[in-house]
Image (cartoon, rainbow, N blue to C red; front, side, top):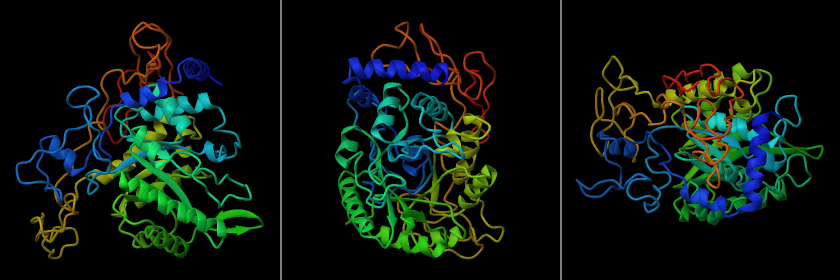
Length: 458
């Protein structure tokens, strides 16, 4: 355990023991943001003029304000999932320990050190291009106390009862966040996992997921469903990697609940993924998974998958938090560069007919670029509809990077601070360098290959 990890655990435990109400206060103060910063609606707020969203009010009506606008603590959170017709999403996953998954590569207990895990999460969250995190309440609450969730998307993990390797693994009960708990904590969505298998326990999990989808949708919160096609062999659950099995599982899960309006999928990268993705119109995030023996091929598979229209981004944890070379910032930046490709405007075909060179069908809301009007997504521009506006979080960070003071003690001069690993914060207290180098004066940080300059505080 590093000095940083020790300091983090000591300070967090002190707050939890003496001021448990600090958790809810920190969550209430968290500055929220739209699900997709580079969506058409966010572009309109930035002063651009993308096509109007389906269902928007009369001409001249102004969009709702961004979270944080107006008086502090009085502005409502942005509608979760707004602008889902454009942009990408890159989340760091940290809900593995709650299901007993601590293994990374050949180390069976890699994620067992909570202080070290939090230190690595702080490093990842301050990198340009990282939109947010997926985790259980223990992780989310720690990060909220550290002030690390401002301006981030936060998904709460819901069903963690299917413990890895246990006889009841397929009976994946909702033992973590509820839809009501996610809403009360001001989080941005809920995530659940379902393994489609010929077992009674799988049916119970399907029914529970359908109920959770309805509960989240009633609150206009996105429901992210991680889908596997599974079978039981010698008493152990195994996930199938063939395209046909995953396609069948996707079609089953896509029909859960009374509405699919707020449903996103989270899928493993398998062979013939393009054919797999033709089974759904739901926006999909790639599952990072265990890094395996060939991390380079893992990154390459993500890059290939980003060309598929339904793939809107990535949720990765162990591959990025525990890279073989130990450089968390570098691994995260590589992944961010891959996701950033999703936001680059498409070039029109030389033949003038749009992406495929042929005439295009008119859209209800007007014409596109190229040889004819195009079909934009209901909530934004389709292919060729103009460049997306960049996310404010995508460029180089300002100066020394964000700080992570504790709400009940840190801050300027009030005790130890937990600044971003790439830069120093003001105030009296020790600072904590990232596992990948730098910290205060410790050497230059690596810029994100996709985002321009890095934090500049090393």
